[in-house]
Amino acid sequence: MIGWLLGLALLAMPAAADLDETTVARSAPPPPSLMGPPRPRELTRVETTWRPFLGFVGNSWGAIGEARIEHYFRAPFMVGAELSPAAIASAGDGLGAVTHARVIGAFTTDFVTLGLGVGSRLQRFGSNGLSLAPSLRLGSLDGLNFELTYTHTIARNKYTGQPRVGFSNALAKIQVPVARRVALQLDAGLSLDAWAFLTLGLRHRLFGDGGRGTWFLTGAFGLASVIDQSPCNYDLDVPCGASATSYGPTVSAGVEYRF
Image (cartoon, rainbow, N blue to C red):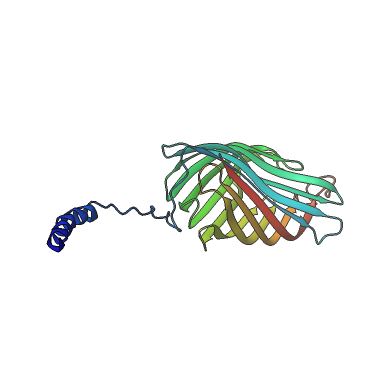
């Protein structure tokens, strides 16, 4: 009886070994790179950021912001529209504003984006004109990157009335991921229209994995100023006129959604 049981055990041993040899271990796919996740594909991205401030000048306030919508194709291209920037100031001489509204297009890969925006510059106290804005991004959109957009305008000189092509403004941003959902952002802008800002803050991915249904929230603090135009032009019969000027500390907020 004992020999019969030992024989059955020996016969069963090869079958167990064969079972072990055919076992397949499954593991979760590795997460995307923290510094260089892939670019968005076949989705639309909507974002806006605003930097309001109460001015050091009495009874003044202002804000500098931007808003855009971008659609990313499966092919390495993006098209969209933007309002960038929109600078507003209110002081004793009334409300002043300047903005650039453009359609945009870009060639975009995981690590490089080259784009161009074409539209209009609109200014309350100054002259309107054509807005041309080349742009560059080095690095991943949701990872480590550096962005630069500089704008030229074709407009009439407010002092001479002659058409001119000149530099208008530049926007720059540096983004450094510090965790899977959090990145440090340094954001700056300078314009001859004139306005300027410098902020430091964080970008937080609230929901989603970077694809459709993803929400981002940004918050920052810094300084901002808006001067709608110089208050005086001594070549005119009435040298000094209306001007809206304000500058002060700002706490900015932004939101982004992808669908």
